[in-house]
Amino acid sequence: MTERILIVDDEKLIRWSLQKNLVHAGYEVLEAVDGQQALEMIEDEGADLMLLDVRMPRMSGLEVLAHTVEHHPEIPVVLMTAFSSVEGAVDAMKRGAFDYLMKPFNHDEVLLVVRKALHATRLQRELALLQQQQRSEFGTDNLIGKSAKVREVCQLINKIAVSTATTVLVLGESGTGKDLTAKAIHYSSNRAAQPFVNITCSALPEQLLESELMGHEKGSFTGARERKRGLFEVADGGTVFLDEIGDMGVGLQAKLLRILEEKTFRRVGGTKDLHVDVRIVAATNRNLEQAVREGNFREDLYYRLMVIPVEIPPLRERIEDIPLLITHFIDRFNVEFNKKTLGLTSDAMDCCEQYGWPGNVRELRNVIERAMILENKEYLDLEDLPHALRAPFEGIEGSGLIGRTDTAVFQLPDCGYALQDMEREMVRQALEKTEGNQSRAAGLLDISRDSLRYKMRKFGML
Image (cartoon, rainbow, N blue to C red; front, side, top):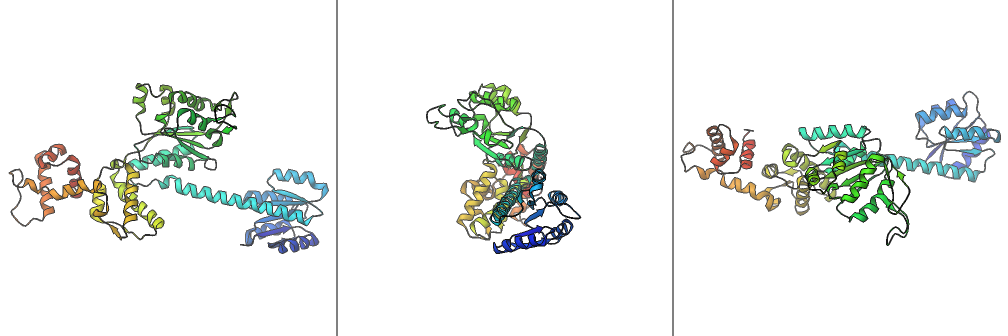
């Protein structure tokens, strides 16, 4: 797409000279004789760059600059000035002008400044687009779920994101999405334009982890051939995500506590205190209270981290979110694998809703990914799910609860009942005989309590 340059100058010869050279260089050129016309042309036709004379009748170049910076900050402005106006031009740059050109022009210099301004603008647009994509991809809208627990987490994340809080602790089982929560906090905040860096505390020995976080000076240890900036320096103004913080060594915990409290640290081998402004989001699936009691985690650091805890619920506690997550992953893998899968059959969905998902959302994602890699069906069926996942479900369905009908426990009609109707009646009678006690009713039916609850949901009793 040809970039458009607006020349604003009351001298016709200057406009003609600039226009001739810019068109020859491949640009589209618009011309305005004064500031008022320039502002009207911006509104009507737009521009990618403005070459603006400082001294003009009716409206000065500085007035046009102020209006453009306020209402069209995406358009870079290059001021054109005579020698007597250099100081004013420099002052105008402080007010938002990209650069200035001296009259009479050197046309090679004009093209150089134009290219530099347009290149800077393209980079700004690409950065803005990237930030918008990151906000869309990692914002709270990407936390899939309609359950009350997920809504509560999203509301808490949004409150944290706009706050001045610099320390957050994310708690949850493995696979619940603690990393997504950390990114949602970052990309929903005013720190989104700054770096988000993460490190897994269990992945490195303590000395290497300290070097990664704090950086090191040249010669501070064997192999340190040059100074290295740590993640806290790299992320200045942004967010550092410390995953599996429960596995961090006690010695490094003391240094982390200093960063949390004073925002200062020293590189490994350094003597100078460095100050940073970072938000630290830590995450763990460990019981930190127990780790404190066992002496594996500092009590003072624990209480410093627990100022704002965010607890991510396991998938088994938000069963109503499973269909939404499955749809989300199917849509994602349809694009990635060029498939046209529409969903799961009712049996496969029932099986997924009954399963306990010890690996949480990560396990669900992997199950759907595996099935879609191996199959080319419109609807994934029970047989497309891993054996470990469907075995309990098939066992329940295979027994059908009918094995208990040869006893005097249940009163069922001799005929006229479909198998599913008989199961429903047996569940109803078991709950009635035990006055709603699910554990005793499950024992009466010779099935697990989870299986009973699945049947109750299936028959609309829960």
